[in-house]
Length: 284
Ligand code: NAP
Image (cartoon, rainbow, N blue to C red; front, top):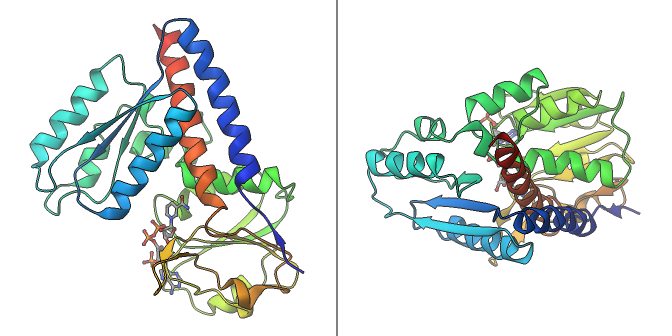
């Protein structure tokens, strides 16, 4: 039998921690505030932004949804990011992707001050993560680690295979796993013998964006499988990168989609926001 590694309890615990810290900040006169910059008509990005805003409200974190036009220029987006960066009433900033086609997303990310970079998007945050220095890691990558810890999955000395090497998930997950003493292999679309490599893993982390791509052939018997993928299935439902029916009974444990990594990611963003607010208040 495959055990389900749900994200509900871990995310509730993180939200409770965020709410407690937010209450303390409010009592001392600071309203922890998150700003989400959107310049897209992409339905997924809009839905996700509203979901974060609604989750923020529940833990007493204020959320400003800053909607720019889907054909906003780079100068307009840059001006808004710089304004929010200077605004002492904003503690966390999130820039939603996609940006308009002609806008340089890397250049825009650099305009987010590291102390407000609650999703670890900037080169400074990423460099600090790589060096093991304090930073806000990308929330999804951190959610993978939080889930493993919450469910008591041993990482020290574990043989972990990560499929996917994006800047938001695969690469930061690699660094976070190294910090907890795992032995990590990162695979990608050019990896040869992917199934053979994946099937050696004690822990398999999948973040590729391909619905139900990973089947039982990729999974060692008893392995823990973390499914980061969120893909729209033919019927419109949300499915992961792992074919849960195929790996059922082979994997020792599997995160569900939805209800696994996703809620822990959102909760991590909120906790980062209140942590950023506290640090900014302390810094004066
Ligand atoms: P991405 O930027 O498109 O990167 C995908 C990665 O997967 C790339 O490194 C790519 O390799 C690799 N890949 C693609 N096809 C592959 C294949 N057939 N075999 C091996 N590797 C393959 O995607 P992402 O932003 O990391 O997102 C990955 C998934 O996680 C998506 O489903 C996304 O929606 C989901 N996601 C979920 C959350 C959450 O909170 N739950 C947050 C972020 C993302 P190359 O580098 O060689 O191209």
